[in-house]
Length: 355
Image 1 (spheres, rainbow, N blue to C red):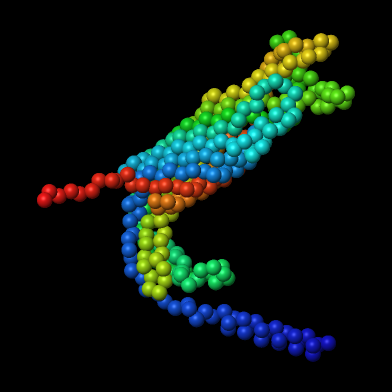
Image 2 (image 1 turned 120 degrees about the vertical axis):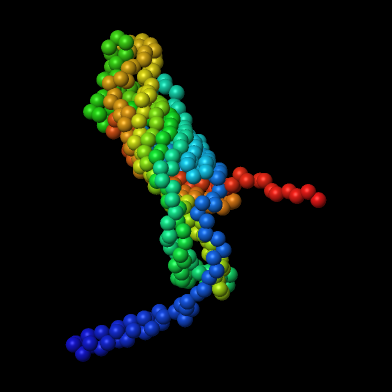
């Protein structure tokens, strides 16, 4: 038994040694390059992109859809940005509105999810430093399965990096349907705590087709506020020409940010219910006050976004935080991808000479 164990161990060591020996790549040799440009301050001034898909895991209303965004860099002092987001449809994907349409027992109109944001960043410090970038080595012969099955080599290239410390300020407006039943439960309340002008609470149950069911309550939330915070941006705009390999480019504009969110105007629509049962104590049309619900006008977010300094490209971004909303319903995680993104430096002037 011992003999067999040591024989197997020896065979395993031999195989492992062979694998390591095979792992030495013959193409791992030094490369030379020529710098084509290294100009982090020579980036496009305007970027406009279409967002074909975003996903917003928002406790108030899980949603997904489309949007658009624009970013404008004004010299080395400011950059301005704006974007909007909207769901494609009720089914794809406006969760609270879809539920309200199917289950709501009140007469409130279910609002479509809309999100608008606009703001500016002041460049407190905009400077340049020496850095390095890692570029993958690629040949046209690596196309297809050969490239997919290959662990690419990379080379470190010295470059400049532009860094921007920024102060951010802007406005945010959004509105949405929401499930008030969940909000009431989260705050230890019930339908009965929503009272009409006569002091009568909203029913807890309702009879449908001879069966008693839970009375489902939906309403709408509208938030108008602002954000204030800080950001840091790294910009590289370098290209080199390698011998025996294709050109390498690193033109990423990457930003991280942290904001406080403040919504002085945060409105939850009162509930409207029409009871058709003449024998009911709530017969007729009544409006039920929702002011008993706790709302949070302060929130925060941390996010990142990246785009490329090209005429035609794509961008990405993501956030996590707590939006001003109904108490206990503000947590969210959002991710978006923009494609295509068009970039331009807005410089169309050419020199002219008299004959």
